[in-house]
Image (tube, rainbow, N blue to C red; front, top):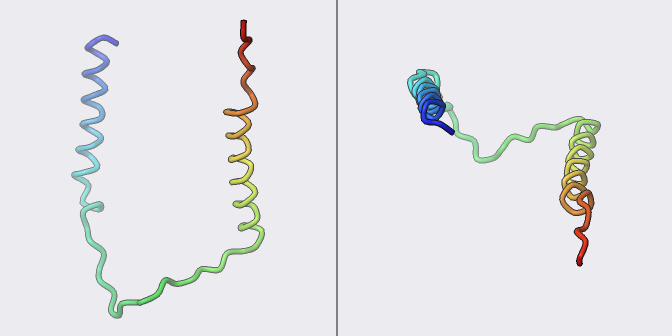
Length: 78
């Protein structure tokens, strides 16, 4: 990689970092609540959503295991 693209990438990343740091919305602290809660609130999720997320996660795990363990051809030993 030549020097010119490296400098350009450095300047772009520096500009993005400066833009995020200068954004006043990221620096604001939320207002404290009037009464602190000692427990987390439970949010009930619909059963089809729970099942879908679980099946999606299992599918992704299975795909990753297949990719790394079963999809490559074994090398021939000579």
